[in-house]
Length: 356
Image 1 (cartoon, one colour):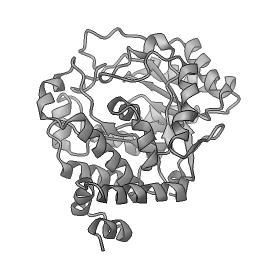
Image 2: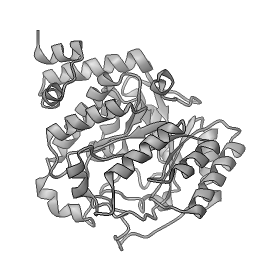
Image 3: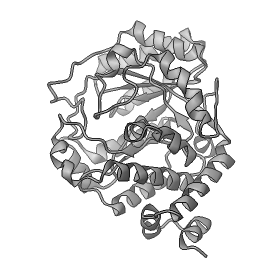
């Protein structure tokens, strides 16, 4: 029996076997992708769930070395959407039957920020007749803040660890950024009842295939409900840009990202897996290819167009010049190319969350 096929059939996902899967070349790679596609069809059908993405602020207190909106980047024009702008975008998502909404921002902290999000959550649910399930992605917060936001209507939270290797994590962040604090936040989120999401960057400087295998095991062991991951993409105004000669070619980072998605779909069959924007930044059909190998979530950007180019975590971010209508018009076509259909009006909660 083919070694790759045997690993997939026996589901012996040791670190060594994960490394072998990540190193596959065609045609073994196609065996992996076909297996992941079958698992997705079995557990999620041919549905792809929408998450209307509102990037409501690029103000950030963090200084991560890879991120274009890091606090120390003086070239960024900072913005904060008004409450009305956010509510208008939420109403648009409800009218178009997206089913779900993601409120994402740079990281802010404090009573005023906590209260603002709580107020927005209540108003969004009120103005949309509770038709939208809401995900927050607002970074590390206190346990009390997570609890308050959950009680006010946020049911999912995305907090990416970026890497599970603590030594590599320290190379990506200043000394005052703590890996253990980030992980503790994920445990707090789980404790208060959120559907918990995380993710990693793939193809980072200093990162190895063994590190990526460890990331897959870490996400499985933590028992995540949803994952968003994709290739590391450079930004010229970041410290990590100085290490650009250490990274794999973009094509290789993209293909490695497809493998990570496919492997995790087979490992964690009933979680939600996003076809991230970074996939499309690396390949024009990147999100479609991600869906074909196991992703089941698509996140159209419904941030007002004037601000989209200012929420630039990395270079060459796609769709920054499109209006929400432009974005919506191509979604069905894009997803249809994969043999899937858009699940309009459905929340698309993580099956894994309810099973655990």
